[in-house]
Image 1 (cartoon, chains in turn blue, green):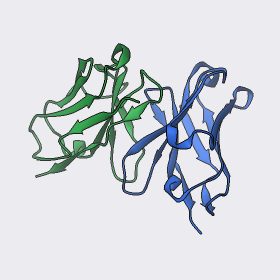
Image 2: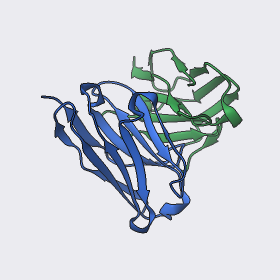
Image 3: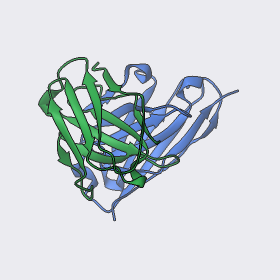
Image 4: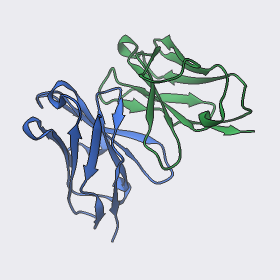
Length: 115
Length: 108
């Protein structure tokens, strides 16, 4: 069974940092682009970042450039999102997803940025 | 950045009806890399259509997608009770990938 499980969310103060992880199983992880998507409470989906199979290509939405870093460890079938200089507007459920047309989603992890 | 505009914002329909949702892009979507998703409250989204018109695995054939360039549509031929949800389009042909703002399909 294809499965993605996110972890690492929580409450953080403005300006703080968090590292999200996504554990993949049930498929050949190193064959797929991977994606992070977020959803603020009561709002729509926002694409955040993606990374190619070997980690050599990474793209970001403008609002997180220079603050967030996407990475992967193919040996551990894991995807990461390092989030620095967090702002209140980064508060959202963060989903990891397989591929660019996301055909498999994790359950999401909630990040709350508040003092 | 490609901006996707979905219309209408909300639709009130009855089970059994046919519905067409629209997604318009601010510039041409490369190679029709356009996807549609369904999201129900408290759940992660589910991929319905990719490549503008290809149904994802396990998606019923009452769902169909069409379009190219800047204009795309998702059609549900006959609404089932479980189809009432929010629908999003996404382009993944150009970085940054982007989502539309969503169309909410509610029961009349």
